[in-house]
Image 1: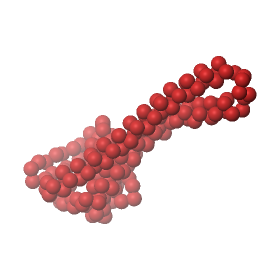
Image 2: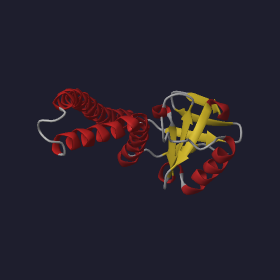
Image 3: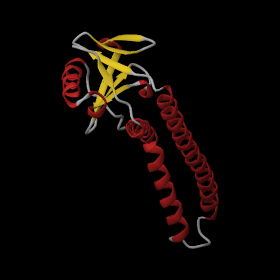
Image 4: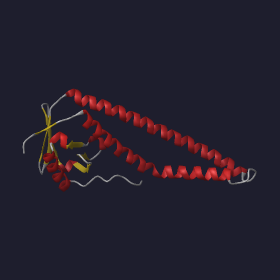
Length: 187
């Protein structure tokens, strides 16, 4: 197989990085699902306790539950703010990454076969065995190949970047070599 020139565009890079960001947030949501459910239950319990009991009964229980609910709400607010900060930082990271990649204006090439994926430019050549990768994912127009470790270190290719025929050949090889990435559903 001959070297395939990778055509990088701003929109394609942004789309890919946003896809990875969504995967990261789906993992976060799965990790905090029980907290969200507990938050809803505590809020419903506290509201029910205050609204549906006589005002002079269960005063101690109401006072303790209001204090605990307040602490829970403060903790929830801290978590929500941390998510917003993370979202802001991810968006900054996406802009910087896209700018840095496009600023280099380097020509990158891809070569793949049953044994390895070769990624090269004018400055370097990296031959990566399929055993280095742990899983893959596909969306409607791209394939994402994940190494063992960080989700954000993945290699991704679209039909626009490497051509539809090359993308289909790459998908066929990847499907035989790697399992599909499992998105974490529960903690």
